[in-house]
Length: 391
Image 1 (cartoon, rainbow, N blue to C red):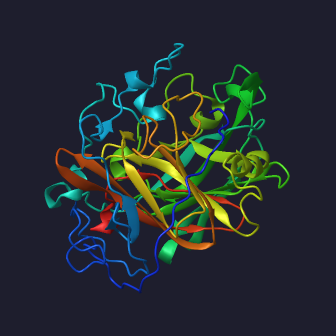
Image 2 (image 1 turned 90 degrees about the horizontal axis):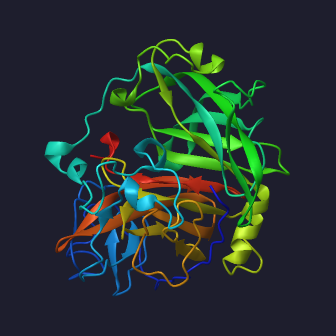
C-alpha cells in the first residue's frame, strides 16, 4: 500500500463529569439528552469517563461521534469490489484482500449481528496454525526479520499471556509461492518491488480475543498492535494445502487460518504527523490509532462516522484511491470507499473506538472496541460488527 500523508482535523470537547456503566448512553439520561438515539448500542456496559458531547455529536459506547448527515447521497453504503478500481485502471479487487462486496456495493451495511436474532455465538476454542505474510503499510523495504508476537487480550486492552512468536522470513527461491512481492513506493513514486516476509505461529486458540504485535529493527520499524482480531471456528480452513503452495505452507497440517499481518516503517511514523500539521510530530511517549469501518460481513463501509476517546490531537478520513490513500482536508461526511480513519497523538492507556452509520432515517451502531495505546506505537482497531463477548 502506498505511503499516506495524514492531514489532521482537530476536534475538542467541553469538560464534564464522570459516567459509569454507560450502557445505552445516548438516551434520556445522557448529557446530550434529546439527541437522536443510536440503535443497537444497548449492550455496551463498560465503565467509562466521558465529557459531554457537542450539539453536532451523538454519544455512543463512551465516545462522542459526529452526527451522520441526514441528506440524500450520504447514506452509509457497503463498498463493492468494482468500486475500488482506480480511475487509471488496475487489477480487480477481491473480498479476501480488500474487504469488499464481490456482488457489488451500494446497499446498506449488514448490521444483523447487532440484533439478538443475529448475535454471533461463542464457539468452543480449538488450536489452529496462524500463517501469512507481513505487509508494509506505506514506505519501507522488505518485511523479512519482522517479529510477530501474538497475545491473549487482557482487561482494557492490556496484553495478556503470550501465545507465540516468530520472525518473518523471505523465501530464498524466487519461484517459491512464499516469495510474495509488492510494489514499493517512496512518497508517490514507484521505486521497485519489495519482498514480503512469511510467518507462522502454531497452537493459536480460536474464538479468543487476540492482540498481534509486529516489531523489528528499531531504526527501521515502528511497533504496531492490532486489536479486534480473533479467529472464528467457521473461518478455519481444514482442507489440505492446495498443490503448488509454498514449502512453508505445505508443512502446515490440520486446521489453519491465513492472515495478513501489518508493519509500519519508523520513517512513516515520524513523517506522517508532520504532514498532518503537527509540527513536533506525535509527542514522545504518545501514540496513534488507525483502522477501518466494516459491517457484520467484514465489508468496508462508506460514510461511516468514527470516534476515538481520549480525543486525539488530530483526526482524519481518507480519499477513495485504494492504491494511493491520502487524507482529505476538511472531510466531515465520514469514511470514504476505503473505510479508513486515523487518530494521531493520544496518551498511552485504554482507548475506545466506536462508529455509527445512517441507514434510512436511523443512526445505527457499527460497534465499538476498547484497545490500548502504547508509547511511540500505532494501535490498529477495525470495527467488524458485534463480537460474541460484546453481548
